[in-house]
Structures are given as structure tokens and as C-alpha cells.
Length: 152
Image (cartoon, rainbow, N blue to C red):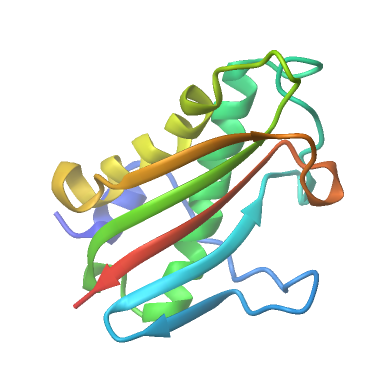
């Protein structure tokens, strides 16, 4: 099954690339690697604001991370032209806007990691990962994720 068949099966529509909010580009390709800039969580087209462990629960964070993963897929598609050319999701880095006592950042990030495995399969979608709790994210967003992918 192609990546696009899997995306369709999951009911996902690839979004266009978001316009950067500051002095950076959405992606950089060097050799066979594509580096995607951090994408913040959005809900109804606006930053998904909140802090895990204060006014958001882990399930909310997982949904936010999944939504970011969909946005990242749209950017990755724009970067490479064909998601079937993705050889592997190499690395995901997740920043979770968290209360000091919140310790489930890794579970929040699963919302993105699990989607990548569903879309690309267990081999190409499996990746190295870091998940951090941070005091704040731009625009008050609850989660920000960046990605590195290898392409053929």
C-alpha cells in the first residue's frame, strides 16, 4: 500500500505548508536528509494554547501531537514532492508546554510517533526521539514538534 493510500485510509487530508512566523524556512534538504522546522499545535487554525498538567490532560496533548504530525506530513510532502520517496522518519523532537510536575511528555509525543508508524509502516515510521517538558512554547502552544526524514 502506498503512503497516500494509507493517508487516505486514515482520513487525513494533507495541509499546505504554513507560512513561517519568524526568520526561518519551513524545511531544509541536504543530501538525503530533510529537516523540518518546529510546527506548533493548532486547533481550528489557531495556536492550540495550554499547558499539560495545568489545563490540558495527556490525551489532549496526544491529540495535539497527532495534529502536528499531520501538518509535518504536509510540509514533508512539499519538501520532497512525493511521500513515497521517504526512506525513513529518522528523528522526532517534541517540546511539551508542561507544568513543573508533569512527567508524561513521552506519552504526549506518542500521538505523533504512532501516526508516523501508521502512515509509513513499522520500519520506515520508527524513529529516534526526544520529548522535553518546557516552560513555554511560542504563542502559548501546548506542543511543538520538529522532524528529520531520509529520502531516496
